[in-house]
Length: 87
Image (cartoon, rainbow, N blue to C red; front, side, top):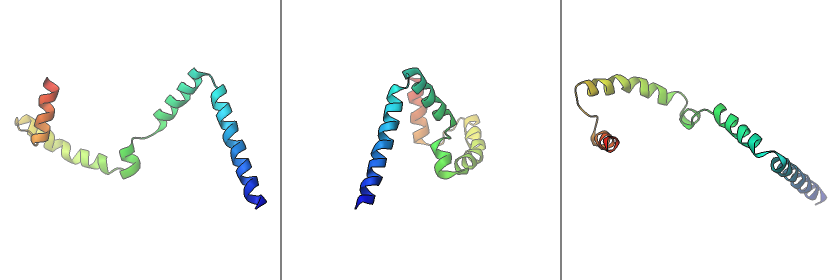
């Protein structure tokens, strides 16, 4: 039983140290650390699906451009989106 108590005490000590270190850090530094972390992170589409979104985008780009040149839309959803953007 004493093994579990020691582990939980270590965990509480670790979490407390991290919390105190975070609170003592100046606000500007916290913002900069958060911004740096955000920049280094890749978009969720790539993390979840790898290169599949890129491949689909490359495959459908000529279709979209061709439809745009001919003055056609790719569906009702696209047309509604265009109308909302115009307003």
